[in-house]
Length: 286
Image 1 (cartoon, rainbow, N blue to C red):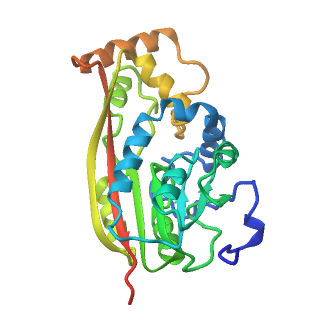
Image 2 (cartoon, rainbow, N blue to C red; image 1 turned 135 degrees about the vertical axis):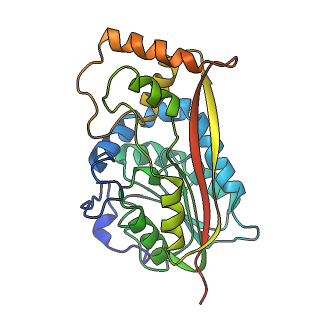
């Protein structure tokens, strides 16, 4: 396995980096909290992952025709659902599943898909330069404070001619929940995300050629607010931001949230809008 950057990284313990150049200072959660939250959610994640499967499937469909990677990397592989899809799509390829959440990898490994499971950080990949032909990442990089570092690492580990495809979330995601909480108090209750313009700028300056980059809304509907908040917790994607309220949320505030959110109700139910960024990048051959 000479594609490993450092053998000490091939272990079941998270690799953390210092957030010395965060894209959103003070606004994204600590990686240790992200890793712990998603590890705890490993067994419940797939039961409520409707959005994640829809987005990842869309991203798979955007990969260039004729792509035949010898080795692919599923970055932020979670429970391994798309590692298994990648293995089916590219049966002759070697697969690497990498995630910062150790619990996710422990859950994924027995189900197969990838040949290797590595706990690692997208901002400092434990892989050798030019070791992969495809980097696939669905709904993971929104948790990375330094997305420029993610792109640099993608550029480094891709072979010339390789492809980096990612799906992420941008500003506007869960705006109904955010606005409803704003009507109740001034605390941070909803995870923050980058602007689409930040993704466009960073990708344009990455040294990778942008084949496509766009944001598309994906709306889910719930019978009540509790259905949405329960799903976010089961996914491990509940509020992890600095400035979030500590302790239990009071009954009066919950009632205020429910009342405010009712203003968004549609015939299908209460909407939760996700603004999904889809990008496919290509590393030039020369």
